[in-house]
Amino acid sequence: MAYDAAVPAGPALSPRLAAIAALVPDGKVVADIGTDHALVPAALVASGRIARAIASDRSPGPLAAARRTLALHDVDEKISLRLGEGLTTIDEGEVDVIIIAGMGPDSVRSILGAGSELLPSIERLVLQPNGDVEPVRRWLVRRGWDLVDERLVEERGRFYTVVAAEAAVGGHRRYSSADWRLGPILRSRRGPLFERFVAAELRRCEAALAELRRAPIPKRHRLVALANARELLLGELVGSASASRNC
Ligand SMILES: C[S@@+](CC[C@H](N)C(=O)[O-])C[C@H]1O[C@@H](n2cnc3c(N)ncnc32)[C@H](O)[C@@H]1O
Image (cartoon, rainbow, N blue to C red; front, side, top):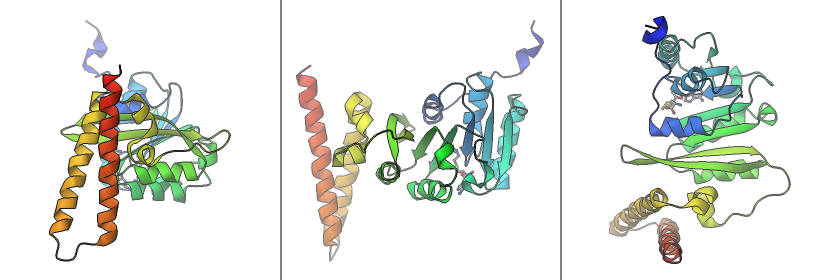
């Protein structure tokens, strides 16, 4: 019997965390900012896909959870734990890839915005904003990043999008409103999960419209924005239906 049989090979990842890990290229040095449990860097190192990582968080509680994960999976010597705000814990040239996941789009943008000196040395950003992804896509492209990959997953009835970005070479790509909202790469790949996602977005949009219409004085600009979003989502579903009929 092998003596290391009791040491788990690495943590199991939920579909959301597995999608984040899938967008990290093999062999890179990774910093997971806002790591909490550190499951993603632990899984990447334990599987041998990467040799080293940094797991960073601004709060001691999550970092204690990270320490437990690393010890449990025997990767504590290969993953450096850092306590501090955003990207301030990383030195220039120390990592190739930055992961920021499980936070709202404003937090993701503010962490990236505050770390602008570090970003030119980064090869790839892997971002999973909770909620609205459009502001993060727009932020990236405005600052010279290209959207190079996207993953969509459903976990416990919620949809999550993971975006990978790399420094853009050449000029800006042109994106439509539907690309910004739903993801240019997800839209080009489509598939049943994407259609369920668009249908769920449409239901959410229609519920918000119905609620707004019941208000004594509905805010006009919000009504217009929701009506436009509804049109966009309906168009996307109709487009998907006619594309599958033509297959
Ligand atoms: C909801 S958890 C997400 C954990 C993990 N990234 C995931 O996707 O499952 C958010 C974590 O980010 C940390 N965090 C939030 N804002 C941060 C910041 N500006 N800098 C560093 N850590 C931050 C929190 O302390 C918390 O541990």
